[in-house]
Amino acid sequence: MKKFNLEHWAREWFLEQGVSEQAASYMTLALDVLLLIIISFIADFITRRIILGFVSSYVKRSKSEYDDIFLEKKVFTGLAHLVPALIIYYSLPWLLDDIAIPVALFQKLVSIYMIVIFLMVIARFLRSLEYIGLRTERFEGKPISSYIQVFILTTYIIGGILIISMIIGRSPLTILTAFGAATAVILLIFRDTILGLVASIQIAANDMVRLGDWVSLDKYGADGDVIEINLTSVKVRNWDKTITTVPTYSFIADSFKNWRGMQSMGVRRIKRSINIDISSIQFVSEEMRDRFMKYERVKDYVKQRQSEIDQYNSEAKVDKSELINGRHMTNIGVFRRYALRYLEEHPKIDQKETVMVRQLQPTEEGLPMEIYAFSNDIAWVNYENIQSDIFDHLMASVSKFDLRIFQNPSGADFKSLNIKSEGDDPSTSEAGSQKE
Image 1 (spheres, rainbow, N blue to C red):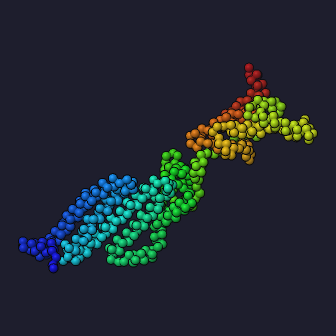
Image 2 (cartoon, rainbow, N blue to C red):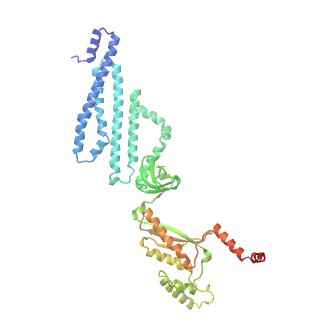
């Protein structure tokens, strides 16, 4: 049984109208293409308005949130575009069965179109999974974006190979063989992508960086919160609100600091020094000891310490005519005890962590007296205020122990010294007297 063919009818009708045979063939082909376009528009309308409308209404009634995300990311819309393409693909042999070359050409074009649409649908589906993963507590802080980008890139590569093989009429294995011969070039082109993939896997496996972590990378000038981790880069929002983009593999190749431990424990370290003028360090005299006994934070220490020293000196029969003999308190030792006591009483210092006041190696800028403790408030502004309040008090207290803070002399110091020396110069005074 001979099937019905529109081309035969149209071609015969054109010939009856006096159109030449060649013109009738072209006009018949144009009519067939027009019919295909009309059919595709009708199919697209039916799919988008009826089928997609039904799917949308079902998704909105569904209690699951995942299908809502797929609808929002237009996964179903992409699938709807495949229906007209399939109708056109299977209609071509029916409409153009007498013209082999256009049928094969059009089917190849439609096949490429369907591959592109399918790739788009897969990409949207993966983006939806990324959206879900980033908002799921189980995957919090994981580099979901990196993995999704790897899958999308792999999908595009496979789709590209299929399209190329379809255009040139070769097997996909032939294309893969050609790519294998160009491995060096491919590695050079996708160097950052490959390094980023390896780095992402290591970062996730070792839990090195998460979204929201405070990281510092001096090499790249990055100091702030991680706001995005993808296949090739990590975005850091710095404290000055600028954004630094750092290559993902730099977190493996270079050194960086992650402040997550501080944030999780709820404490932040205070580590700062006061430089004491070494020339102001001395033994505690009786007058100084009596004065120190009036200071609430060290009076018990001074009393106990002096009792221990007196007992030792008495048992050792020390010659007390010189302070250097035997054991004696020093003003810097008492001040160090005072600073420690002050930190132990401070309500913003976590007493469960290390609290210490220690001397560091003396330098040309004096003797560093380091405060080492942990604030129980990690908020930046609050932390800085706590630290400043502590050092405000300690620096103001130094002079009460007959100590001086080291400071390089300024121009005003030299000027006052010069004025003083001129005022004490006898020749200047005598010359001034004679002038009068």
